[in-house]
Image (cartoon, rainbow, N blue to C red; front, side, top):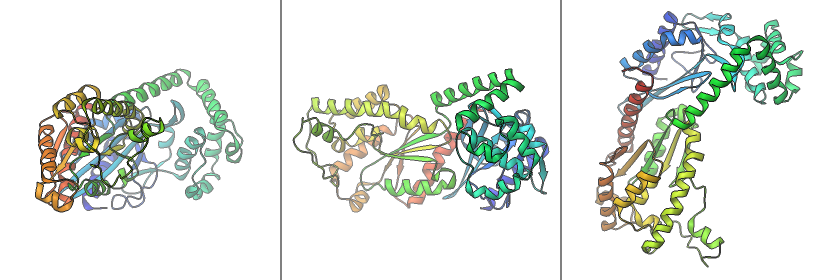
Length: 441
């Protein structure tokens, strides 16, 4: 971990030490200099979080860090913080848990954890019993087994009378071994009964709040974000995308979806037509994306309509399901590619018409990166297009670059420079959006 990230962690923990009733849940050894996990999990009372929220956000902002994703669910508030330093990217994810719960069913409240917190000279943390209970109760409620890598934690926790009492009161089981054998529906039902006995009103409020935040985060989808890359062959899209994912580190390396051109709910149009008996043969020479001949207006409209259905349905099934939480969707080409490169999609319609069709019917991504270079550079890198073809694509890129949410990036230097430019745009925009959502000007 760099000194920049270590300083950020020190600043945030210092604020929490002064102002909040909190404790780090796990993987705190080595902080702030070493972070063993992709995120830092903190248990905190809701009252403490609300009291410290504005000061926390102002601290992040004043030190030059950007809040690039922000999630507020029924049990968790997440900040993914980023800082661009030259061509280097720093990311730290903070997960603030106000309880351990599932579907609004309370399993363990923050106050139960914090009775057992300890201080190691730098931060507060929970003891092994609470570390175990946080994972064990949640895993059993959703039907999962306790991770084998935390066996040491379980062996320590099994000696604790507190752990045994908690499992008995919540799941009505005599021991961990008995609880291990119970099916998820039985344990979930027993947890519901325990909630109804001890906190009936709180249980109802918790379920309603869970449903409300789940639906809100799905519909608004402004927790994670989506990026589409468009540009002529030879502009360096694949290299830039791969490098960007690498720069985003552990936080997004596994927490992203990578799609090509469209969501692909439906197969290639030629394959579908062949299967339906409309076409006798299919040209599968995919190494030449511009191999197809020019199509007429009716054929172009048919293709546009077919792909539009895929974009519309696929957005809700394959994009929003990811961006509703703190994750990233990347398209190597999106609908913008139909506008810029009609030969590839064989949709020969005016680019201005295609743009307005997209504005009306096609769900937009958060960021549309128009990656290109000068004609001579592209022709040196790739020979799929001629000079006239590259000029035509660049002309349409210039047109799209004037539209909201579209950003032209010239990839004439190193890929690292292009990635830095892209991430600066995204980080700044995301930060402004999230400050507004957090009510901080």
